[in-house]
Image (cartoon, rainbow over all chains, first blue to last red; front, side, top):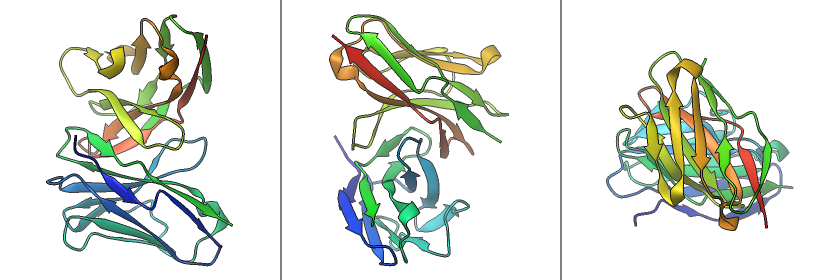
Length: 112
Length: 113
């Protein structure tokens, strides 16, 4: 069964440092999403890509977060500088139209 | 604005007992509705989805959900719970043509033997 790949699985970083996460969606899925899940809450959309274009980044804290999907395939989410409140699970998902979303296993970020 | 409410933060059921997890949504248009399950430290696995048609939807692992438009609800059910069902369950509504998911806060299911 096809999967969404994410790396790393776990990341510990000091506040004010830069950190990056990588996502490889299911082959052929044009839409890619980054969600943030704070402990005890449901996931919240950060950014949505359609191919290489950003469709929705209204909830992305653009002063410190950036996301790119240069060739319309894999994607990178970056935080610079990281803050304590960024500690969360970062989930990537991909979809083919509205057939449903497949989530990756996530990256658990701890900022110390 | 669209929102999803899962009224129960925690639910404990005995193994073999039936289960119902509640979900209410607020959305002005016809909703796309989803249930996901998440084990600790893992990503989200899709249990079932409703787009249109039959309001009783069958999913994986013996789960089903019923869409009730009049009550703005999409409750998840299972007739007999197994210990392996212990996890956190999220209800979500798809907005913007189903291309963006808005999640509830989740319900943690504990199964006692």
